[in-house]
Structures are given as C-alpha cells and as structure tokens.
Image (cartoon, rainbow, N blue to C red; front, side):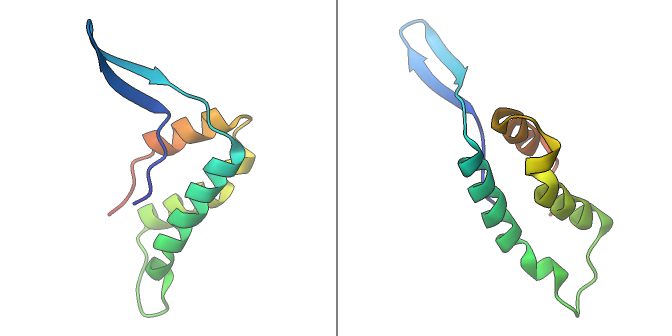
Length: 84
C-alpha cells in the first residue's frame, strides 16, 4: 500500500509534536497512480471484485477532480478505509 500522509511527527525536549505539511498535486497523482497500479490485479477477468474495492478504485480515479486542493485530496486519501 502506498501512503500519503501530511503528518510529520518528531520529538522535542517538550515531547512529541505532530505538524502537517503541504503536498502538491504531482505528489497526490503519483501516489494515486501507484495505488491504482498496485490494485489492478483486483480487476482480472477471473476474479470478482467486491463493491468496496470497486468504490476504492473509483475514489482513486476521481481524487483529483473531487477536491479543490492537493492537501484536501491527501487528507481524504489518508482517511479513506482501504479494502483488503
């Protein structure tokens, strides 16, 4: 699975800190394309793809057009419950 998280966690003298960083559309599309390639085998002719897997691939394909910013798309990708 390919991860796209805007969170960066590190330790300071005062404890652990998590910050969000910005991503660009190029990064979102690269991770999306890799994830689509990784899941291509789900659609082989001799397999039956579950509805959850179909929905996930639709979500991936439509990711750039459904969000105004790359950050929103990255957050949605991270929050999406990915099927096994």
